[in-house]
Length: 282
Ligand SMILES: Nc1ncnc2c1ncn2[C@@H]1O[C@H](COP(=O)(O)OP(=O)(O)OP(=O)(O)O)[C@@H](O)[C@H]1O
Ligand SMILES: [Mg+2]
Image 1 (cartoon, rainbow, N blue to C red):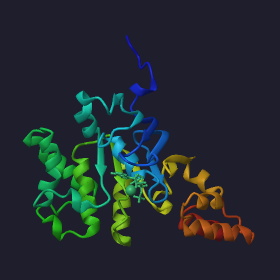
Image 2 (image 1 turned 45 degrees about the vertical axis):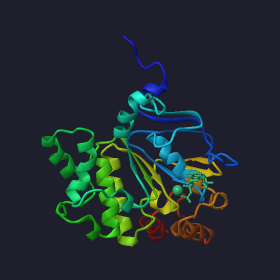
Image 3 (image 1 turned 180 degrees about the vertical axis):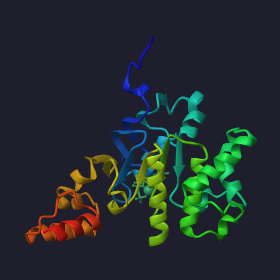
Image 4 (image 1 turned 30 degrees about the vertical axis):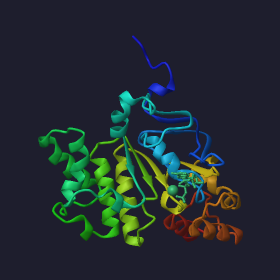
């Protein structure tokens, strides 16, 4: 009997010493990046404009191949054409602008498009579409024309389209960037539900606040991993985080100010509720 002989055979997306240099570019967009994406966990990916976040996202489902190094999805290398479609089915990708991904004339058609193309039988399509719409809170809008949806609903429709492929991983490139407060909290709630269902999530964002409960955070800087750890580790030194271009959430700044005034707010209090509780107890 043959057991897993290397970590590559376990369920993981592994980037190993990955570099990407776009044709004609002077410097690499990614430079020897090594990191893992674990099923059921959320990895937040932060970093300033041009640091390589979208490039990394496109590597995960073989939309882009590394110039050097390896990207391995559950044991399958993204350069192996024989397993390309298996990788695409395992790793869902949601672009920043949902308009670019809408293909159906009504919501349910749009969600069915991906699995239909993968040859999912008609009798299974209905349950896939219903489950995906349920997961993002769009049940009841099956017959709505996508262009009549709000921006937040469009983004959740794009997520449903990716979910209908029943992916093990979902990579989202700034899924809340174009949304107002309500649209944003709806998308974040949908992502929390997916994580609870065991989907591995890569959440690219400029707002640490959106991913404060992530299992892991990586901060890119000019194509290299400048920080890798937990949100609490990143915020243990707010000034260092700011140096990396990370916008420190207002609640963390408030907690720091309270501590300076002698209020014993724990260092891992990152939500309004936990800070309020510490103030209440003091
Ligand atoms: N298709 C492309 N061709 C050439 N260069 C590119 C291409 N896409 C990105 N780049 C360059 O690669 C670098 C990384 O870009 P990338 O889009 O990955 O950054 P990003 O972190 O997603 O930035 P943003 O926060 O603005 O979305 C940048 O210097 C960018 O100009
Ligand atoms: Mg980007």
